Image 1 (cartoon, rainbow, N blue to C red):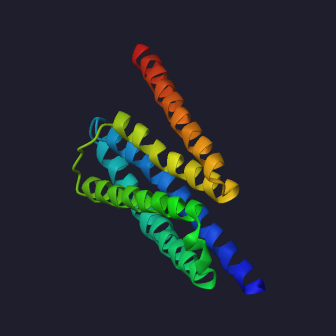
Image 2: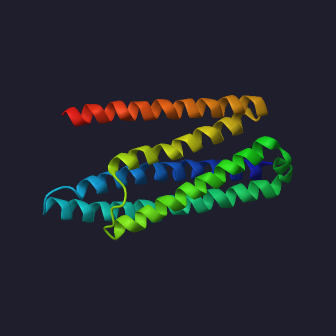
Length: 179
């Protein structure tokens, strides 16, 4: 049982660092996209620095954290396979699939920006950054509440929270445009 708690702790640590990497990488994407609009030589200096920063974050923190979080999660499921019969766990795993889709899309954006391909606006990236937040809220509610009705309320709360974030984003954008 003590081994189980160590594995669970390691899983949680790497989930936290994985999310930290996902939150920060998209923020760096925003800065990189905005740096592309700067005049030369500031643009080149900033873009080179952001490429280094995103590379280190992505390959030294985010990717290893995702792999280790997954490894320890699979180990926990191996030790306690009855979890797979629980409805909350199946829904949680659905959100984990969404998290991997989000992660792989971030990887695609990372590759594009490393090649100086700017396909998204900084405003899009600001909204995109909330995707990981929504997934995090859903997973935490599911893991803590474990009750079908309670997690449904949690997920509804997440969607309401998302609407508030989008409204706040539009309000912030208007303030920025007035300056």
